Image 1 (spheres, rainbow, N blue to C red):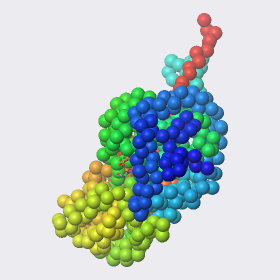
Image 2: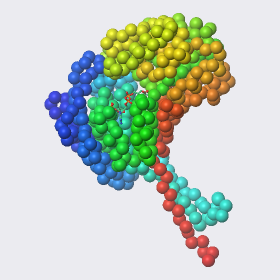
Image 3: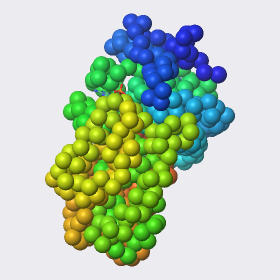
Length: 488
Ligand code: NAP
Ligand code: G3P
C-alpha cells in the first residue's frame, strides 16, 4: 500500500509528479523516535533544485486540476477517507512512534482526518457562484449582469507542525485541493514520515499526478527558499509564532494563513462548578503532554476560587498516566531535548521568583513531570511564554476585571475558557477577551473542524475551519455581461 518506502532500509521518498523520488543530492535526514530513540527511517533532504522541480510540476498540472469538476475532486476525498480508516491502526502506530502521541489520540487524529476529508468534499460541492444584476445600484441597469464564480489561487504551500502531522496537513491540503489549487506540502521534519503516509493515501485515492507534491527537509535549511519561491501563490502555515513572523516578513505580496502559538487562559468565576472546571482544565492543559496550541496554559482565578481549585487539580494531576504513549500515557516524552529544556527553564524561573510547586517540577530525560504551579505572578516568564509542555500556572487575581486585563495583556490571542454558571457574566467576559474563540464552560480546543479556528495578535492571521479555509484559498472571478438594452 505505502509506496513511499523506496528502499529496503526504511528509506522514504517524496511524492513528485505521481511517483516517489529521493533528493537530487541523495542526502537524507534520519528520523529517530522520541519514544525510545530508535531509528524510524530517513527522509530526503530536498534541495533547491528539487523545490524548483516540484513547484514547476505543480504549476504545470494546475490547469488540469482546476478544470476537474468538483464532484470528481470530491470523489478522491471520499476514497482517501476510506483508505485512512482502513489503515488507521498502522498509520497511528507510525504517529505514536514518530511524535510520541498516545495511541488513542493517534487513532483519533487519523479518524478526525478522514472526517475532515469527507466534510470538505461535501462543502466543496456546495461552492456556488452568484449572478448580480446591475440595477440594484444607482445608475446601474438590468442589462449589466455580473456572473461571479470562485476560482483557485494557484499553487499553495502548506507547512505543517509536528504535533498533528496528519490532521494539520489535511486541514490545509483538503480545502486547497477542493478549491482547485495544486499543493506543495512541507511537513515538520519530526512528523514527516506520518505526513508521507498521508500523501501516499491521497495518491492511492486517485489524486492526479503533480496535484500534490511533498518536500521534506529541515525548515531551517530549505524553508526560506520554498517560502520565497516565485511559483507559490498562497502560504498556509501552522507552527510557532517565531517562524510564522519570519515567514510573514519574507512573504511580501503572497497571501498568508498563519496558525501560531497560544497562551490560552482559563478564567474560573466563584460560581463555577469546581469539579467540572477542574476536569476540563486538566484535560485541556495536559493532553499530549501539553503539546497543543490550544492547551490551557494558565488559570486566572481569585484567591477563594484558587483555594478550591488547587486540591481538585492536584488530585487529578497525580492521577495522570505518565510514560510510554504505547501504553496510552498522557504525559509522554516531549518532542525533543530543546523542548524539554525550554519547559524546565520556565519552571525554574518561576520557582526562583517565588512560585509554589504543587505537583511535578522535575524531568526524566525529555519526559517532564505533569507540573502544577501556584502563586505565579506577572513577573515570571511562565505567566507569558508558551511552554508547549505539561506545566500549568495559576495566577491569582483580585477580581474578574483583572483576570480579563491579564488575559488580554498576552501577546497571544488564540482561545480562552470561561467557567461560570452565569451566562450574563460569561458573555460580558467573552466580549472583552481579545482572542479568536472563547469557550464557555469547556476546555480550549480547535474542534469540531468546521468551526472557525483563528488566532489574533501573535497567534496568527486568517481563519481555518473547512468553509473558511476554502474561501481563503479561492477567489471570486467576475464576468460582466453588458447586454444590448435596445434603447439606442
Ligand atoms: P515550528 O518549529 O514553527 O515548525 C513548524 C513548521 O515550520 C515545520 O514544518 C518546520 O519545519 C517549518 N519551518 C521551520 N522553519 C521554517 C522556515 N524558515 N521556513 C519555512 N518553514 C519553516 O513549530 P512546531 O515545533 O512544529 O510546532 C509547535 C509550535 O507550533 C507551537 O508554538 C504551537 O503553538 C504552534 N502550533 C500552532 C497551532 C495552531 O493551530 N495555532 C497548531 C499546532 C502548533 P522543521 O520541522 O523542518 O523545522
Ligand atoms: O496544536 C494543534 C491545535 O490545532 C489544537 O488542536 O484539536 O487539540 O485543540 P486541538
